[in-house]
Image 1 (spheres, rainbow, N blue to C red):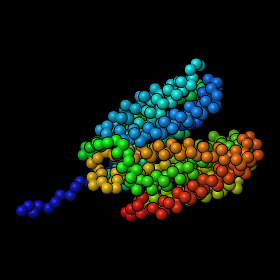
Image 2 (image 1 turned 90 degrees about the vertical axis):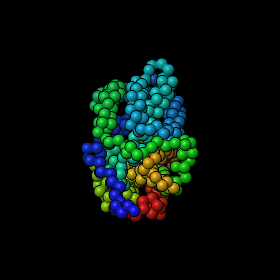
Image 3 (image 1 turned 180 degrees about the vertical axis):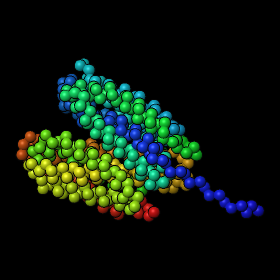
Image 4 (image 1 turned 180 degrees about the horizontal axis):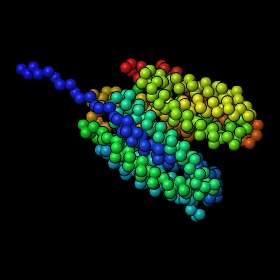
Length: 432
């Protein structure tokens, strides 16, 4: 009889800080690619090509809906591809090409050019993003490590947003020339930061095998995970609560605060605050749990928008405080839910060997679909509501209605998210 003592399984070594930073670096250029599509492309094509706003809206919405619908399929496919890094390497050159095409509109055939370049950019961005997020979930050997990986990725992403927002104006006072310069610099930044990520970040454990079986069956099984559905519902409500003020902030600054010249400074403060407070949320999550830290950030966001509801013309510094606090809450929103999802994707319900089978891609595919639809739903809800309450941009007419939609409507969604997160706290993050 063998009486030798059992040898305990080796505990994976914690990732060093340089690996955490290297993993997050790719988040910067990916965020840079996302911002111009949301912010600059409508104005660029309207001014440079003379396209009607109605046609622009139809093309942008159609491309976004198609893009969102493809995300779960890309996620499930990435689980079968046998290597997240290879998919990222495949997607990034296509993304660089798509950005160059998208930000250089032609004088003729502009609708066709816009549609083709949007689809190319969206496809490459979605494939790279889903594979990148799933890679981070698989890299982490513990809940705390997955939180740090997510924080690194989202912190670099927020820096990318700041760079993409500032760079066109720094390169040229002309929008088209500034965006052209951004598009030409983007491949170089993408090459440098992707090389850092891919060369320094360690590979996933060799014991993990690619997913097999029916792709659509795996997508259905992900949705059958009750913990995932619960987290997804909280994420939807909280995401809409965040997207509503993001859609309306420029209207609020211009017509309620009457401080349009401060718009850029307010946005910069908002995103800079999110970056600055990320390390604090990681510390709070490590000590009290990620769900409780996320709930605390919701309380901060609620307090900031209750405060904003009482502001009026000339309240620049009080609104700066609103941007500081709501930006701090944004840092938690970007990091903690995705870290909880990474845990669920690594230990799905009913799976006895989660660490040996790739599956995170399907989870993050559904997640990204919902994140994109949140933005569309927020715009589709808030803008018609402004018409209903009688708000007209450029004046004081209906400004009380604008305040209600900008400040108070998000509170209902945020409150619902907080209630459900607390109610389901034991399943979303079991006691440690």
